[in-house]
Length: 243
Image 1 (cartoon, helix red, strand yellow):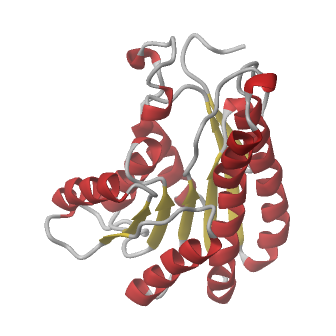
Image 2 (cartoon, rainbow, N blue to C red; image 1 turned 90 degrees about the horizontal axis):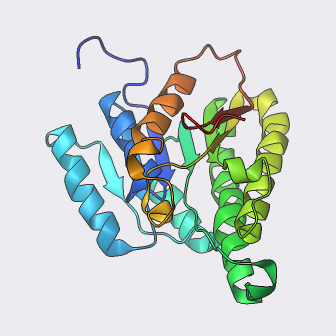
């Protein structure tokens, strides 16, 4: 790895870590020598991701996987508890777990609306709530919340998703206000189309989408900034989609 990174042995929790952005963030964190907990609802996908990521750490004990539904407080608390029991700290939380729901407003069921809000917005709240006491004791920590361009401008056919991602931005701003006195920073990242399973059926060809690895690099870059530097929000767009 060359010169040791100052992130060596810091601890990251990454939700939605079995694929897409979450998996790419885990790769980036491991490449910096961080210790990582990945989490996802699907145990089979999570197990496969763990197997693949372990190849990158060459047998080092720097990676665990904890299945969790981020919309269920007890499961979130267990995810954080297992991380603390293993490594004793949490330096980075990446709230990445998310789902989409497409269709006209009158076509979306109440159940589907609630599911999107529960995972995308409530999940961000629950995970943040669970790690904040740890970060406050440490007097340090970084929380990155994955929002979306759909959280900056409403999208027709994606009202539930847009509403949840607007909420993530507002929540991040509140978190930043509350956390700054405890040396806890927060950033909302708002990407356009990223080449992930969620948008596999989109009209944009995968080769024209943002690579998940770029989001991983952005998050690592945030961690390398001086502690006094605060970036509230990052908008990431693909070439050809700039307004």
